[in-house]
Amino acid sequence: MEWGIQSDHIAIDGNEAWLVDRNENALYKADLSKDECDLVSMVPTPFSIDKDPLPFYRINSYCYKKESCIFLMPDRGESILIYDLDKKKISKIEINNPLSVRLSIHDFWEENGKLWAVSHGLGKILLIDINKKTIAEYYDIFDNPNILPGHEAKKVGNCIFNVSRNSNMICEFNIASREKKNYEIHGLTEGMYTICYDNTNFWLSGISGKIYLWDKEKKKITELNEYPKDLKIYKEEVGKIEEIGFPLEQEIPIFYKSFLLGKFVCFLPLNSNQALCNKLLCVNREDFHMISIALNEEKDNTTGLYTLEYIKENRIAGILCERNNLISEFGVNLNIIKKKFLKKKDQTALMQKNIALYGMNIEATNLALKEYRKAIQDFEEIELEKKYDFGKLIFDKMEKK
Picture 1 (cartoon, rainbow, N blue to C red):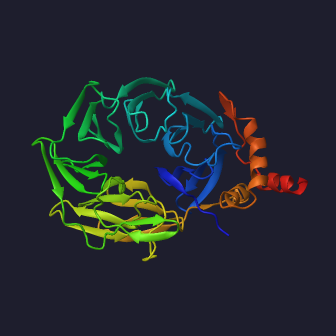
Picture 2 (picture 1 turned 135 degrees about the vertical axis):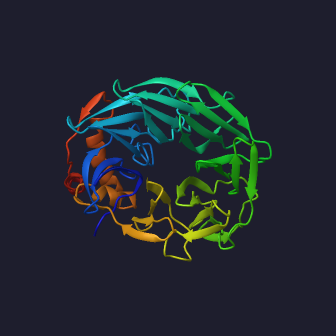
Picture 3 (picture 1 turned 135 degrees about the horizontal axis):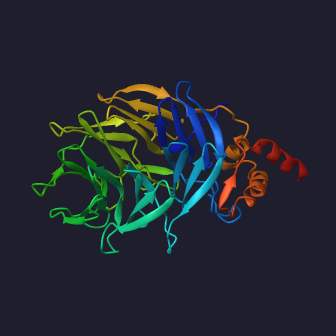
C-alpha cells in the first residue's frame, strides 16, 4: 500500500519541494521529478499526547525555505520552528500569545531580508528578522480588538491587505512606511473571508459565499449575483447530507482561499460539515461570467478537504484532494493538465502512526510516540535523527502488552 502526503502547503524550490504532513507534523523533502517524498524530521508538538485528541494535526503546517533553513509556520502550533538542513537541528522563535489563541499563520512574504507574516488568530502582522531569527515587531491589523481578520491576506507592492470577517473594514498596511489605512466599505452587509488582487481590482468573498468586486480608487463595491446553477452547498448532520442552497442566508464561511489563474479569479471551498462543497468557483475577470469546476471525480460526493498547495506564475494551481491524496494541477483554461500523487518513499517509519490516526493500534502508537516525544517536549535547540523507526518501536510496545 502506498502512503501519500496530506499537506496544507508545498514550498517549491526547482525540482525539490518542502512540506509538512498535516496529520503527522513531520517535515518531508519531495523530489518532484519522481513524485516521491523523503522523511527529513519529525517536528516537535507543544500538545500532550495523553490529553490532546489531535496532538500532531496542523501544528506547523506551512513551509518557507531560506537558504539552508526551512521556516515552519504555526497554525495550531505555538512558535515558528526552523529546521537547519546543514546542522540537522530545529530551533524556535517564540511568539507572544498571552491568550493562547490559534495563530493561523499561512500568509507570509519575504522583503529585504525580513519575513512579513500575518497571524489571523492574533490579528497582528509579524516582522520576522530572518538572520537573527527573532520577531522584531508586532503590528495590529485593526485598531479595534473587536474587529477580527478574515482567513486570507494579500501583499500588493509594499502593502498588505487584510479583510475582516465580522465587519465591513479592510486594512492596508504599508511595510515600508509602517503606516496603516482602514477602509470602511459602504454597501457591505457581511464580513469578508478572502481577498484577491488582479492588478486592477480586489476580489472578495463574504462569509455567506457571495462574491464582490472592490475598486479601491473609485471606492466602489459591486456584488456579483449570477452564480452557476450547479454550485450547490450541502450540510451534514448525523451522517445525513442535505442541500441548503447558495449563497447562504446564515453566516457560515464557504470559501477560504482565492487566487488568480489566467483570466480567472478562483475561490476554493472551505468544506466544513456546516457548508460542504466540491466545486471550485471561477469568475472570468473580463465579463464577470462565473462557472464551477468539479474538484474530484466523485460527482455525488461532497465531503473531503481541499487545499491549495501551490501556484505557479498564475498559470498552474495545484489543489490537493484529501479523499485520494491526489494533487490536481489546473491550467489557465480550468482544465486538469496533470495529477500528482506524492508518495512517501520510506513508508515504514510512520506507517503505524498513520494507521493509528484512522482508529487502529492507538494505544501502542501513543506509547511509542510518548517515549520519543518525551525527550523533545521542552527544547531550545534539538538534534533529531533523520529517520526514526516508529514501526519497530510500536510493534515492540504491542508485544510487551
